[in-house]
Image (cartoon, rainbow, N blue to C red; front, side, top):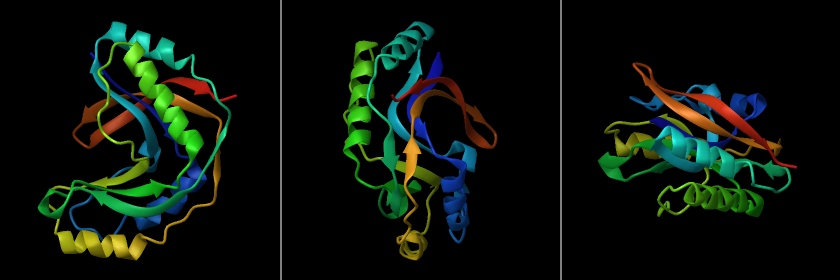
Length: 178
């Protein structure tokens, strides 16, 4: 079994705009810049043959380069159940099309449909039982985030590995967007 997801990597210059915001939230487990990405389709733990089929299906995805910007911040969960803070992605129909194409590829590879609404974001930190007032303050202090546009010319298939310091990701394959 291998844990996989398809995603767009965040360029170093954009990551540099995010890291100063990774502060002033007690108990946050901040993600390292090399882990910043926009998930297109989470596959989860899959057998090797399904991973191979997913990879083969992802190679069929077409579409041109994208121009993306990050804007605003938010959190997943409510009250004591808030579990992450994130940077948002400005609405982009090309990104939504790419995510839909990754969903189709996943289904063709035999994965179950993802029933969650697609919310493109970059996870900045995971939280465990945070003080909701502190999270609200962090959101208020960082909500004016707006990065310069960045060009996306590829997306990747990543594996996710657990360690004592949290999860880390490895690019398994890159797919160009011509």
